[in-house]
Length: 114
Image (cartoon, rainbow, N blue to C red; front, side):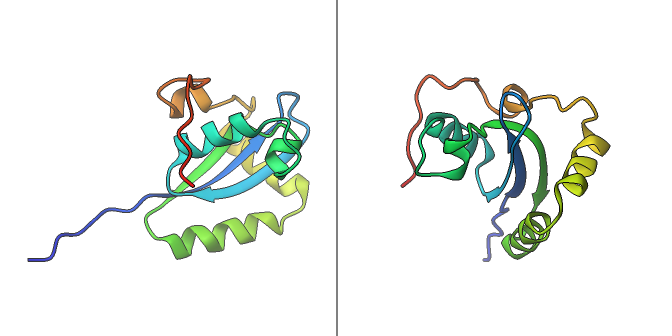
């Protein structure tokens, strides 16, 4: 008997507390990835960490990794204005979504996946 496993992939956009820098990424565990971005803030070894991009402002769900990868690549190729239009179409006031996506924000402890 074949058991079908549902997969979850997300393309997401985070920004700085001042909403000045945008970061686009892809993950299969959005709450975990946001916690990692939050923990990395201020650390120059990653783009999101260096620029404090840990506030979630947009995300899309995909059941197949290939589709998520294609969408991430597409969005990364866009000009800033097009990215802003995408965000504003769904979240006109650029609401930070971390608390609605994560069980707790900020997380008390981040368990590293790698």
